[in-house]
Amino acid sequence: MPIELLGSWVLFAALAISTQIPSQYRMATFCATGVALLLFHQWFLACFMAGIVLAMADQTYRESPMASPTPSQRLLYYASFFAGWYLLSGPGGVKEVQVSLDTPGFGYLTSMIPSYYYNGEYWRWWHTWGALLLVYGVLRIQPLQRFFASASLQYLGKISFLLYLIHMPLLWTFSDRMYRLVGTINQTDLHTWWDGRLTVPDWGMHGLTTRFLVAQAAPTNHSTITMSLLYIPEVDGFHRAAAAPPIVRRNSNGTVHTRIMIISDTHCASLTNDTPGAVESTNFALPLPPSIDLLIHCGDLTNEGDTREYHEALDMLANIPAPVKLVIPGNHDLSLDREWVISHLPSDVQNRQPEMNAAEANARYLDAQRLWTSRYERAQCDGITFLEEGMHSITLRNGAVLNIYASPYTPRFEDWAFAYSANEDRFNSYADTLSDATNISRRPVPLRSEQQVDIMITHGPPMHILDIVKVDDTMQDTPGSPALRTSVGCPHLLRACMRARPLIHCFGHIHEGYGVKRVTWPLDADEVTSRRMTIQDWSEQTEAWSQRQVEPTGLGQDCGDTEHAVFLNLREGNALHRGKETVMINAVVMNKDLDPVNAPWVLDLDLPVAGGVVLESEG
Image (cartoon, rainbow, N blue to C red; front, side, top):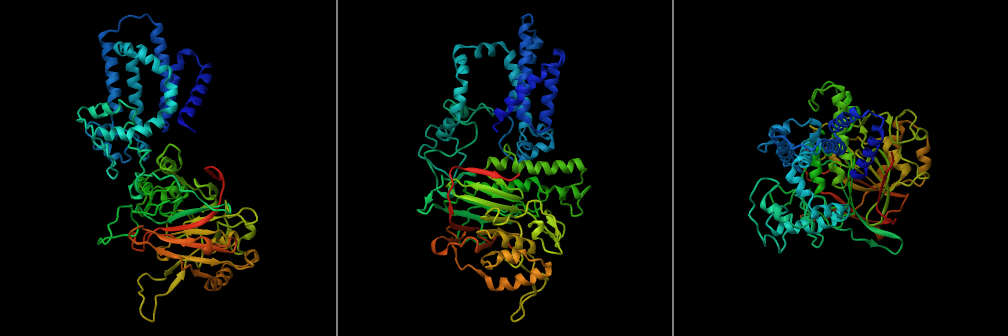
């Protein structure tokens, strides 16, 4: 919901409720409400409350005898105006709070901001107070009142709503051009013929520099450099999450050619422009393939799940040019698992979480959730959708429709997040659980007869599928005597996957398991998964099956340094037989030594078409 609409609803509700409050207490009530909203990180609602307070104060001021203000009152009004101006001039738009802490004149003010604001738009704290002080000064300073009461500005006030309706097209059309024309070029990887043609000296204080004022003479955006509508750069020139309009490749049979990129276990890795032949060349680098319709990240965005690491992960995701980006957390994204955060009080013995009480721990979890799920926070603003455990129905911009099951949970390993015991089944219904397993499912994978699953996104692999690790890391492979290895995937997840038989099952977690396999399911898969048996019997039976029916696809094509990806063609002659075959992909970017040596997987396949762009999630 747009903040303007939500704020208006809250405003009207507050005014209706306030009719029951005695007039002498009404302003104090709105003041207290505004401060409380600001303290609870609802800065935009606090601004609406401040507007009510200012309106009430202005009404009282105008109804009182209009005596000239005293010198001390004038000083107060001007001090309020310039103090508000100063606060509004503070650094904003930069997610790293250290930038503001290092800015002369704002370091101490920044240190006074409540710490929970650091996880998002921390500058909103002082900007809210600055807006209140500045508007109060404008309402009291008579020269400014005469200026704003002029006929031309009154006319602009009358058409302000119409300007609001068209301001975004104007900003997106003119802002970048005007800034570049007068010499402000922040996006250095994009070059146009008008760059610096009318360069203006950049003099003056922040917020009132000459170059800024000249650029503002035409409809411009304040400091955000946006991509020109009439100029679309090459793939390696995308600025943040910018993606070209999807190229719709419709087929005559009612399907559409769709390209999906899959990565996992990036652990704060950054995407940089790789130089072919460089000594430290990596397969996880720019440029990436063009025309990506969907990006999937299968978890372990970070190393230990703190706020700084989340922003590093968001920086990386923002550089991938895809119109729809789906992510799930992994066992290393600690603060996104409330159960883990609360269970590690007062402190974590491995120092992955600072000492805190229950309220602070809950706030840590909520802050992490808000960063990834709130429509006002960075992830959603960058076009990233965070998937909770369960089913999600998604329609891509090219019209392809997908039913996706997502889950971040993996079998317990040491002391990490989103864990369950080996004898616990999180993925099947009670009726389909193995006989000696304990069912803990909240949102199990649905049966094919209930709902078709196109893609399963889990952090960990199913048993026997790209899940092999050494029993002892110290053992080395020698000719004729390879080190002993074992399967560490989840047997319950394999059972759920065999029941659902999706087109694609992608995961990560096991850094030694990078690869892809094409699974042919047993003809009697439904009957096999309905049999009552123990975990051990299921493991032995499926191990024998996997050795016969799980094969490398042989379809991967490494494009090397030109487009850092391994392509998988699942179209036409290589198309999957729905309900009979599944492509299993372990998409870990990091190897066991946490080096980003593995390239993203890029799949080309044909999917059914639906109309419009929809993102609907269960729960």
